[in-house]
Length: 259
Image (cartoon, rainbow, N blue to C red):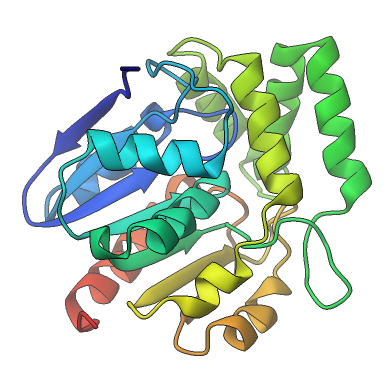
């Protein structure tokens, strides 16, 4: 059986953190340590990322199966960032008994722009896929810069992101291409609409990857969701605005009643 790297910090109500495309669980470290002062926090490297073995094909179904087989069988809050949001939604769809709360951070249940839905243009995502084939590391570096480029301390944040990402092996190219395929093809809006547990959606007004306009569409899909648009954040609010994120999560975990 393939190995899925994970670590657990702290004690209290359990939260599982799922990272985004091209990253690994080390991206959460500082934030997770603060979160762990009140909760039991589990960090996971997705397959083919960080210290986890690759699975093929790299699909949401296979990823969620591997997570379910590896992590303790208990209801948790699943927090997905970016691509990780699709994984968290898939866990809620396939293993609803394992999900008692859901948090989507800079994540879009339908990543590509549709006529009635805010998202990324198809040609932009296609260019990432093409560039990835030519130079993986350069494409990852560019992606890191895009995530924070609208912030005043963009250079500092991009450097921190790059240091964190390079602290573990570069993700397998098959996993990277598979992640882009998920972003391009997965439509998790029906999964979000079907959810009956508390949902928190955190978006950044300065996010260049997930449009702030998404905050107007989420309630149409899931009216019970709590949507928070952070005025000065971009695609990595847990890095740029950790205090605001921690307060949001604390209130969400304490004030929302399990359904």
